[in-house]
Length: 338
Image (tube, rainbow, N blue to C red):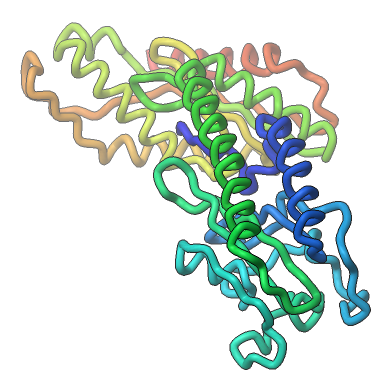
């Protein structure tokens, strides 16, 4: 389905890479001007927690930091961690802690107890709809008393980063429009093939088996002729929904032609694909197709033909060869019904 953010962590998306270089310079300058120990752009994921997207490459160090623990730039802190950034995220507002030393509310804050960061100033970063992306923040191993002008500096850098987030959103929106099927919301053929090639590259690198399913809506002409084209569209939408409800999170799918769909993912054996096909059949059998402008009442559910092929590692076949083989398997299934 169409998504603006295509990774758990935006910093892992190549599309944002040019902006990350700019953010790095901004964070380094911020840290230097404030004479701080460290500066960060921290990304927030409500399921995974907090992770540094950018960390300053220089800053004042502290003899009190715990050198046996991973540095903060390399850690992912769980969502419920009692860290300074959580205060910004929870309150959706800037937060300044001049000195956390000996304050009971920070007694279990790893940024204080492990990293020695006594002072913190952070402001929230948001997407255009107000959803939180994370924070831009500075840490210091000593108490601070930042003047208002320094706080405005950080807020100005916040505005620059949020401008990049808006550009990223616009890019993804345009990309999704060009790679998505407007009727079903699935990837179109170009989108499916783009993602499939990425999956195949990863499979070759990590020695995964690849599974591919081809699905065809049976007797599309019957749906269009007997019930009307709106009913044919409704049947295609129902099949698209059945596919998305039946596949795993790691699978990709798309509408690759008029009434043809494809699914690709990592598998252990053919049984994994059979399970997905069975789920789709079961979901479709319970679907209710209702079209107000139908030529006559609809008392049936869409039926499909499906073909599945497994490509065991080392995967040598091209995507085109894989799709051709799965397509032939699908037509064998269709011919068996005639």
